[in-house]
Length: 315
Image (tube, rainbow, N blue to C red):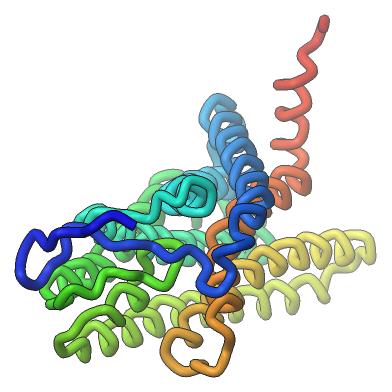
């Protein structure tokens, strides 16, 4: 383990990432399925983004939100997984202090952005089912871009204080992060000063973002189901319910690990640490892997263009 010199009396020049505490001996092998999930996420989201960008007929709100989701997943997973794999495979545990703060910023900003995009997609589904003839007027392309900009701005403004507050904490030589990446509370726990501001702000911002988004999503899907049940055709009802079920699976894959990780850090200290970190790692891998698969397979327009991309006519 290399010696780490402090750049200031309060800030270490670098931190050391443990990886998965308690599973250091096996994390080399754990990295293989993680790597496979990361590759699937990268390939899937790049293909979805490319198809939506290059196909003018897909420049509609639903597909633009899907492209935003794909780009968000690419940033979220790429900001953490390559370093995580280097810890697991190469024992490259060192991460610079400012690089750690940057990673923290990207993780929490784009987690917030993903939550906001999922909320926007739920609203889009509601408008499309409830007001199909007015959908293009209610959610126009400029409005869709505005919603995306607001979601990104919200993430940046809410998360920036995390990095600022953390950069002002004294660490007094504590450098070993019991995590696979620079998650906010994992870093804050190393501080030897008063961390009340970090803890309170983290709680408030998380409940504001997740609470608001989950509330809007829940109301949207409740109204969607109410509308679907009034459809005269049984086939139409089953198709709409099937679509809602696939979207719900995406929401559960994102929010359940996120809430588990968030609450475990603060309240459920009896949960084994390696379980907590494994769930936190999967939180950055499973949703980015599932999103292009679920939305790509279930969306006929994207599925047809993927087939044409890999099976062009005349070949």
